[in-house]
Image (cartoon, rainbow, N blue to C red; front, side):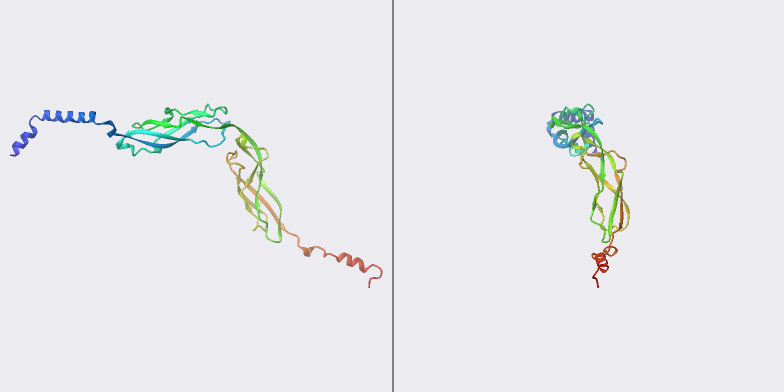
Length: 245
């Protein structure tokens, strides 16, 4: 019995192997493509790179791209936004151009992923020339020293800092302020290190260390006991006047 089964299996094994191979080829060729591939949508961010040093983004543009991708079913669920990169080279950008074409070549995907479509086709970017100004640093002091003490002088270092940003967002009358300093506990002269706060988020400091030192001089206030009492001098003068008893 075993010999019969063995003979059935191995008889004309070359033809049987060929038939199996042809069946596999026919299955691959004839199976509908949509059963092995799938599509899905993703949202990725378009990075603006190589912006010239003398040009500023006036406001952050909407750089979201909606992609429809196609890949084999076995891998498509593994493809996420982190698998795809999109970059727009702004090295030749000018302040006179606001619409920039997005091309398929700007979007990089894994080798087995195909981009079916993407939108939008253009991105709106508003640019301005860079402006630089030296602005005054103004310390922000809240509260007053305890009773019997007073602030006599406030010094800040550096007194002025260089700031850069879009032309329309930087004005000569602007000030750079410090983070708040609470004076309600100060009874002696103190030097504090504080953060610098720009007047608008589109601006940036052109210094390596974005902090300042504020020196607050505190002294004892004069008390009423140290001053002559009202009417004392007039009473003394009256005692020397004629008719004073």
